[in-house]
Image (cartoon, rainbow, N blue to C red; front, side, top):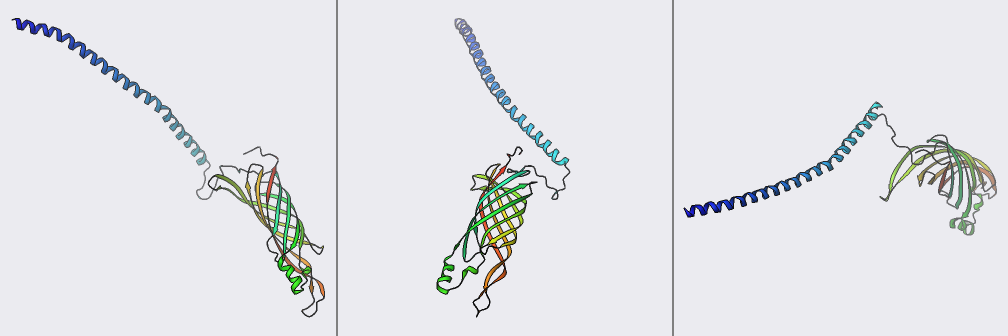
Amino acid sequence: MKSFFQILTNLSLLIPMALVTITTYSQNCVAEESIYDDFELELIEDSKPKAQKQSSRVTQKTSNSDKVNSLKLDPYKDIVTLQRKYLPKTERFELYGAISYGLNNAFYNNIGVNVSAGYFFTEKFGLELAYQHFIDAERAITKGLEDDVDIETKSLVIPESYYGIALKWAPIYGKMAWLNEQIVHFDFYIAPSIGMTQTGFGNSEMTYGLSLGQNFAISKAVAVRWDLRVGIYEASALDTVSATDDTLVEKTSMTEDVFLSVGLSYFLPEAKYR
């Protein structure tokens, strides 16, 4: 009996301790679960803005595509320009200054300055007035002909200046990467021209020309420009009567000048669009 009462006494002590232990353990478990629940709620709350942004982007893309589709474009036939030019030219003046060099004169170095002023009615079309002045220097071969062979080089046609007007047409524009560091915007133009070339004989000859060139935009007002102009005219020059007669007489012949110019263009007034 005594042992039975001892067992009951021990159980009466152990049961409350067990209940306290179980209660404490359950409270700890509930606390841990609440921590995980709070963490999941934070993740859900953090993910909501991203989902909303994604849905808004999808909505925006859909609206943009609806706008494009509303144009009813025919694939591979209609092209829509979605971005304006970085360097606009419509209703703006262009002032150009450059250094010119003659490429096709075998007897003289033709170095000069080129200044021009133009006005663009649209992005593609404009008119330009140009003036070029050249300084002519004899090449080594020319001095050799005069000193060693006794050939009169004064009979050669030498351009001294040019002035004229050109119709500029810029059908191509785009952009390219420069050394993988920056994007450079450019346009390419073609310009037929008519003007007058003054030669070393003091005559002014009607000149028909064609220019090709590019503008590389530095800003909305300044661009680096190169220009290649070919001018053809019938010039008067001195020539010998025959192989046996050294008498010099004035004769006309077709002459071609090719000049490369490199300089800066400045556009005004300030572009308030784009």
